[in-house]
Every structure is written in structure tokens, then in C-alpha cells.
Length: 132
Image (tube, rainbow, N blue to C red; front, top):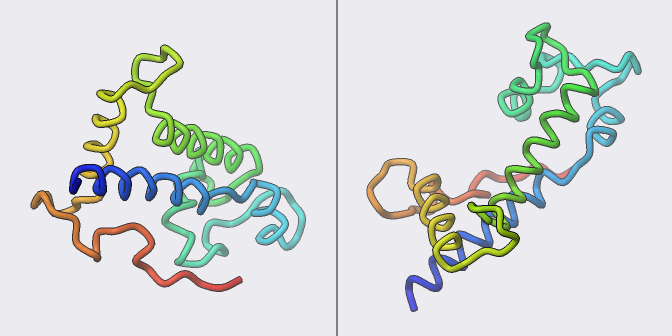
């Protein structure tokens, strides 16, 4: 029973993570591209988003273009889809082994200190979210 509960928690957190990044590049640009030049300075994003979005600056020029943001968004979306549907052998179905392997991988990601336990501090969503 505990294994089933752990698998459900791990699977559910992957789905929640996907929903948290559901905003489109257009929504991002309408919010942050104040001068409408098609670029957003990484420094203007603020520390809350800077670390996460700095990786989108593929050419390292200090700005995120719409194409760079779209590429990052698509990569994250594919990553979340793979977590929700972990079809490792690409046969169109997820068998028990694929599901359990994915759950073990997710558990290992969450277990930041590698002690075999997930504390409240290691759970996703533990940071207070800002209201918009």
C-alpha cells in the first residue's frame, strides 16, 4: 500500500509540475517585453525567474528572443510529457516496468540529499508562490 501511495504522489507531482509551466511564450512576452522589441533582458526578469529562464538565452547575449523562449518552452513541454507518459521503448504504451522505472527516477530527483527519504523541504511546490 505504501508503494502505491508513493507512486501516486510521485506521478501527481510530475503532472503538477507540467501545469505550472503551461504558460506560452506569447504570454511571457506580453508580460515582460515592455518595449515590444521581441527581446527580454535576462536582468529585467527578476531573481525569481532569472535562474530558470537564463538557460533560454542560447546565444548568451543577455536577452531572450521569442525563438529562444519557444525552444525552451517546447523542450520543457516534451520533458513533462515524457514524465507523464514514460514510454521508454516508444511502443505506444507504458507497461508496469516503465512506470515503476519512471517513478524511481522521479523519487531520486526529489531525494536531493540521497538519504532514501523525501522530506517536506524536498517536495516540489514548497516555495510560497507569488500571486499575480
